[in-house]
Amino acid sequence: MTSDPAHTSTVDQTFDIPDCGPLEPVIANVALQLFAYYVADEKDRPIDKPRNLVKSVTVE
Image 1: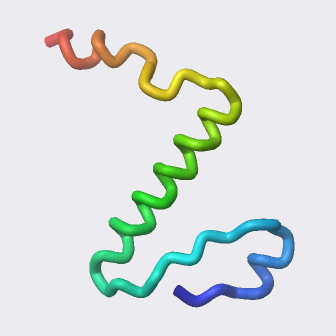
Image 2: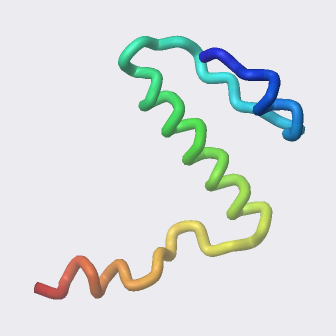
C-alpha cells in the first residue's frame, strides 16, 4: 500500500496493511474492525449492543 505524504502529514498514527493482492481488503477490514472495537472499549461504549437489531431481524 503506497502512502501519500500529503495525506499522512496531519495524522499521528497510520495503519500499515501488507500487500496481499486480492486479499488486501479483507486484511484492511479486520484491522479497522479491531480499531473500532478498541476505540469503543476505551470510550466505555456498548460494543455488542447495536440498536434495533432484533426488530430488523424479526419483523417480516
